Image 1 (cartoon, helix red, strand yellow):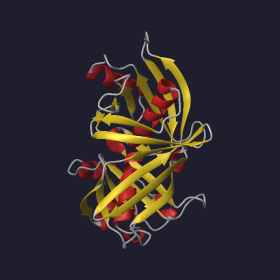
Image 2 (image 1 turned 30 degrees about the vertical axis):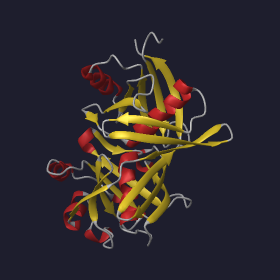
Image 3 (image 1 turned 180 degrees about the horizontal axis):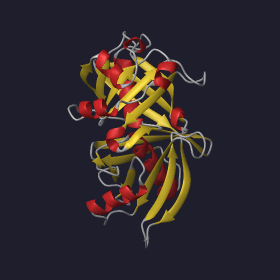
Length: 296
C-alpha cells in the first residue's frame, strides 16, 4: 500500500529524452477530489496531467482521468499512451499485450509492441472518427497568416473528432506550415462558435525523409499556444487521410513529425482504414520515463 501518491514525468512520442510531449502521471489518486486534481494539473502546467484512479482493473480497464490546467478532458492522445506506459512499467512490471484505460469518452485499448524484452512502441485504438463541418479556405488562411494559395484545394478544411475534435487544414508545403501563425483575435472568435479548439495544419513535405507528413497543432484555447505532439488531433488526421483517400486509397500507414518549430521534435505513427463507411484509427509512438517521485 502506497503512503503517498506517486508522480511520474513521461516524454510521449519521443525518440529521445526531453523531446516529444511531456506528461505528468499521478498514481494513487482514488481519493482525490475533482478540485484537487484540477489544482495539481494547474500547478504542473503541462498541457495535460493524468490521474490513475484505480489500482486494479475495473470493468476490464484502469480508470483514468485527464485534466488540463483549465478543465477535464474526455480523451487526449499522449496522456492515454503515457499513462498506459506507466501502468505497464511501474504497476504491472511485466510484459503486457494490451492495457485498457477507462476514460470519460469510453474504453481505449493500448497495445504494446516489443523488440525482444525492450518495449518498442505503444499503439492506441481511438474511437471511430466523426466528420463534421467544412470551412472556407479564405477565412482559415487569414487566421493562419497565410495566403489562400498555401491551402491544398484538393482536400477540404474539415472538423474531425475521435473524442476531441480538431480542425484539419491541408497545406501544400513545409514552407507554408512553418510560416503559419495564429491571429489570436480571429482564432478565439471562431473557436467559441465551433466544437474544435485545436487547429492541425500539415503538409506532405518533411524535415526528415523517412517521415511522410509535417504537422503543427495550435491549441491557444487550452492555454498552450502550440502542442509538440498531439495524439488526439493526429488520430483525427489519420481518419481524415483515409476518408479522403489522401494517397489515393482508403488505407494509410504513415510517420508524422511534429514539434520542430518549438524545439520538441516528436514522432507519431498513424494507421487508418476505411471499410464499409467505417474508419478505424490507431496512433502509436514511444514513451520514455524522465522522472519519478511522490506527492506530499
